[in-house]
Length: 352
Image 1 (cartoon, rainbow, N blue to C red):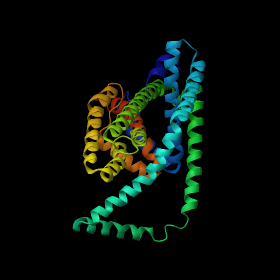
Image 2 (spheres, rainbow, N blue to C red):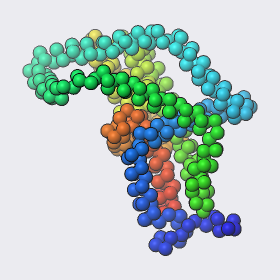
Image 3 (cartoon, rainbow, N blue to C red):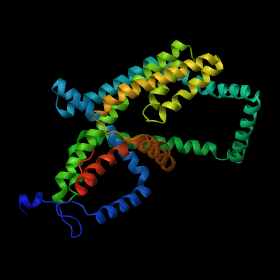
Image 4 (cartoon, one colour):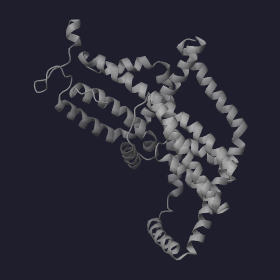
């Protein structure tokens, strides 16, 4: 086959000439992908999490390689060692106090919730609402205590296995990503291989900037929330700041979840502090919306809030915790592929 023939896209009898995919082919491909994803969804999500970890490692290694003039392999090794050293140092400095505050937080939040419900029960409407909630909980908890210990043990084992899979996939991909990219491209017909490579590159680019944006948001939100809560006088501010930073990785849903324990502790300690916590949370949302998010969106794909929330609810409902963690970057990757393959190639539309 000549070079000019290889550059021509595959034509179909039903589709317009020059378009690389037919509508029937795309529908069939979508159905097959949906069926496969349904049966192997959790494993695929773990592999995708490993891809994100590999992108993180390659980004850090690329930074070191650029400024230290190191070969790719040595820069990756140095970055991994820096991560391990930083984690060890942080653990040695902060782990004792963080573990103590985390333990106190797990005890303080239920107590604060109990005290708050006692106060609400003193009011007529509050007592009625709590009675309705408790009736529903009692109906669901009949017989639920049986097997809780076994379930917790299996969840722990499942979490450890998932973490090992993500780490190994990420490390192996980071060592030689081009080998795996070439392997994927070999599955694509020759006429479409160049375009598939462009889609893979664009997807990796978007995921890299999405990941960097989330890490930046996590650091900023964790620091501001921890310092702000300490200034307000909310108990266990350090642990609450770390929790806020970690939950920031989950767009849209994470930030409101992070502020709930801070509000509970503030309400029990001094109701006026709860107002200050809400003001701090609102200020953080303004900083994120008008400073951090636009900075990242200059390079990363932008997802509409409805798409984000719908994806998070669906993946959380279907796959649990790993689903809600991976939903947004996965949808971002899918959006890039749809934009390039369907909108631009099939529809010949350059609308972004």
